[in-house]
Length: 287
Ligand code: 13P
Image 1 (cartoon, protein in one colour):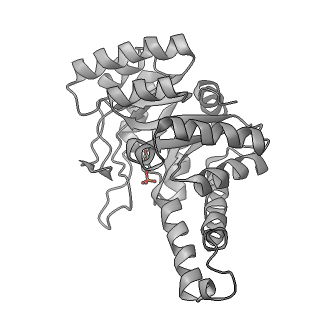
Image 2: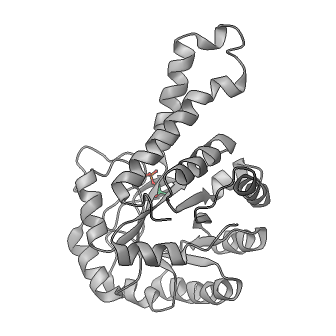
C-alpha cells in the first residue's frame, strides 16, 4: 500500500539521512526502483512530473501500475507516489487519482499567492492523509519546459511556508535540474543553514540531485536535507546502457530485438544507480 511521505521523512530528518525521490518514466523505471528499494530495505519516493504523467497515459494509469507492482512484487518497504513540481490543478488531479503525496510548486507566484494556495492544499492533504511538498525560490535548470535560474530562497519566506504545516519544503539553494554547468558555484550552505535554523524539524528537499558531488550531498544532509530528488542521472545511465546494446549489434542476434531484451541493460543500469544513491543518502536498512 502506498504511504504518505511524511513519516519516512520525519524519521530521516531525525536520523540524519535522506530518502531518495527517483522520477519514473515507464514500467521498467518503476519496477527497477521498487525492486532496488526492497532489496536494500530502503524507503523510497517515486516522483512523477506532469509531463511524465501525461506520457504514461495519465495519473490513474500510474496509480494502477504502481499499486499493482506493490502487490505482485511483494514490496513491503514504505513507498510514496509523489507528484513532482505540480501546478495547483495537477495537485487536485493526483489527489483524486490516488497519489499518496503531492508537490505544489508555487515558487513562481508572488509569496502571498504561494502562501494562500499552499495553505488551501495543506488542508485538503491533511484531510486525505497525503503529504505535501511546497517550494520557495525557483530551482534552476529546465524541467518540462520551465526554466529557473537557481535562486537562493529567502529564509523568512521559507519559514512562512513551513509554518503552514506542509510535510516537507523544497528551498532553492543554488541547485539546478539536469547537468550542472562547468562554472556552477555549488550549493549555498549558508542559505541552507539559515533556512534550517528558522524551520526547525521541517524535512528539507534538495532538487536537482544529479551531478552534485557526494561530499556536498553529505553536508546538505547534515544541514537538514531529508529528501533528495534524482531524475537525469537515471536517464543518462539508461540511455548509455541501451546505446551500448544496440552499438554492439545485440538486437541483431537471435531474438535480441525482443523489447524485454533491448530494455534489460537500461533496467539493470537504473537499479545500480538507485542503489549507489541510496548508499550515499544513507537510507539503506531504514525501511
Ligand atoms: P535532476 O534531474 O537534476 O536529478 O533533478 C531531479 C529533480 O529535482 C526532480 O524534481
